[in-house]
Length: 320
Figure 1 (tube, helix red, strand yellow):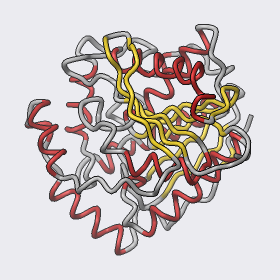
Figure 2 (cartoon, rainbow, N blue to C red):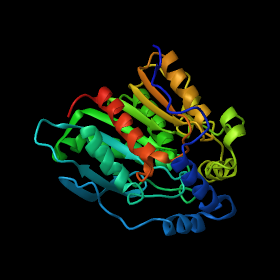
Figure 3 (cartoon, rainbow, N blue to C red):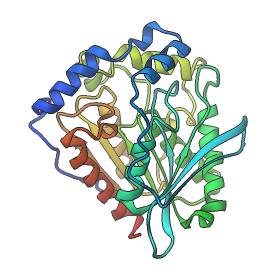
């Protein structure tokens, strides 16, 4: 199967002025998490947030707690306005280096995805490292997926159209859980949506060499995330999806990468390997953009990219 490559968005490594200004501000102001402990990093990240707007509006949202493998597991369900048939369901894992972020950090993003795709979105507040090292987050996502299949209809969702999604570290979790359910007999997935995913801990790729400093998401930060998440190593397919002997039989994939992001090369390579193993892949690399850009709706480039990404997801999941 050939990767369905969508056009890149710019001349390569030359952001537009608005993007360049945002990237410079992020690079100058983002906390040096590698010099902090986890609690300090979380506090620093939380201090940067604006007030929660709860927009766009939903038909309904629900905060609830289910029984997870390590205790109570908080979820937030976003149900968009829709009067037709049951909607596809997206179980979402937030980014944050496996160490920080939560339901509120990605609230706006999940709302945008719910409206843009036409889907019920279930955001998962999985356990964070280092207090809960791998595979705790992976196991929580697997539990949330199984809950979603059993309870989708309650929230207007179609249990036959369940997808996993995640950005950054959450993209890793979506990829590894997709492999786990393939190997564990289900549940069946309609798609995996990997947004600038942190695929592995190889820091010697071209994108790390070119963009590991000066582009906000640094190599030193990425090393720190992996050290917190996987203190006992990464030779485990629950941590690194490329440890799988084969990717055949996985659900259709939407893979989005950002050129100025150190993990970009690994995400691009994963899209190619999925396709090589027979998985239907829709892959778009956004040139001139950086890690996390999809969660910054003030950027015109983000608003354009979201519309394109949501269209790719609709293409896989089918109409609302």
